[in-house]
Length: 443
Image (cartoon, rainbow, N blue to C red):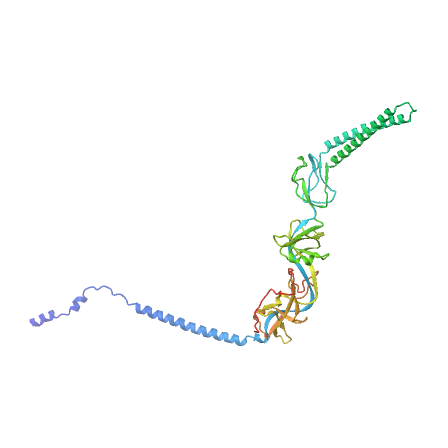
């Protein structure tokens, strides 16, 4: 018994002794759990995206089934009808408004400026008072001249009386020498009186210079001298400047190649347009052509005259001058936008009665503004495409929308037949003048 109990105590499992001691906490195994969550999340997103894609696809198919067929209507384009009209031919050059008269008001005598009788910027009429200079010194000089004239005139009258006595006396009373001397004295006093009269007239002129009047009708500028200052005939700036406004001129240039078109023609019409070339300011006539060509620019100067009754033209204003040299009548005209350029030249898209377009080769003539003349290849009344040509093909069906052809009140139909503002350019009947180009799709 003692032996068995001893063996039992020796064979006690070591785990019991080990478990009786406190153990540190073991870490939780979370790596595999997070990976499972990410997989589930990705699967959910994929399934949701798949169902969303299928839903959108079914909606697009349903919309496609309900969308109307635009091919049956044809491509929408802008179009215009060719018609018969006039094409004016203009030459255009840059010009500057120049007064016919620009006068600097100077004094012709020295003296104190007593009065300035104008408002700066005022419109002055010929003969209006501009300024007055102290007249007292010149009035005194006139009185002196008049006094000398009266004195010498009295001497002359007395000498004439004595001569009359000498010649009418009884023969032998006065010698011939006395008579000749008296005649010479009369001649001497006559000359003195004549000189005195000249002095009087000169003094009157000097006195008249004290009153300065406007020599022409025009606008007066800013005052250069204030009243109370002494003015001199040698002053550089003068008192003020008067600029004539009615009529007024525009000096402009044209290339030397255009000289034959303007040199031997009379009463050529000239239009003045503003700097952006969008508004016509005035209409006048050609007044003069310069006698030489400017060698630096190979151009010639021209002067046009404008009445300028509304004062639309102001001195030194830059304008665009357009001179009408010719007008081509009864031409087939279309908007410039309708003419396209291809490898073989100019062509247009013509809209037929079945709403299909066909490519038509044309020969262009003069162009002015937004108007293009057609020499051949197109008839009046035919409809041409003006916008949307980039997507057209020969035989393609279109839905044309016609351009407005109503002109604003007062507009010249020969220059603006399609109701759009345009700037004039010289036309050419030998070269294509369309400004837009488009590849031909029928080749």
